[in-house]
Image 1 (spheres, rainbow, N blue to C red):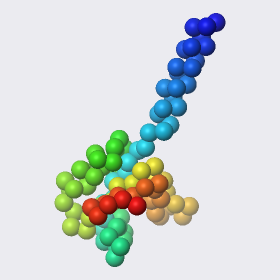
Image 2 (image 1 turned 90 degrees about the vertical axis):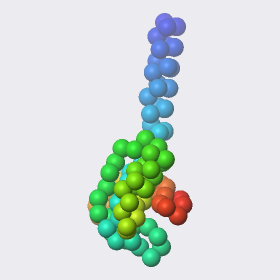
Image 3 (image 1 turned 60 degrees about the horizontal axis):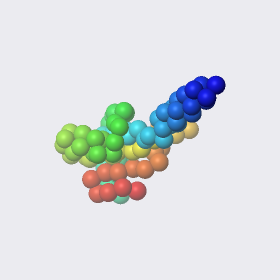
Image 4 (image 1 turned 60 degrees about the vertical axis):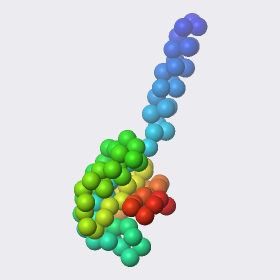
Length: 94
């Protein structure tokens, strides 16, 4: 019985640790907004494990209109905008 309880606790910890990791999304700008972020988004690339990985890819693309990286992004109610917990671009994070 003790082994089953310990196994369940370890399994729960592993599963819950996956829930807390943030996925980062790269949004490549079609037009630049006056505030420095994307006015319109050309395309969205999901699945970056870290902010650094996302930012490096955005810089590597050398898009003249820029990019944004967001954590825990989801589509807005209307389905037109990406809503993220945190957004970063070349000028910093907000």
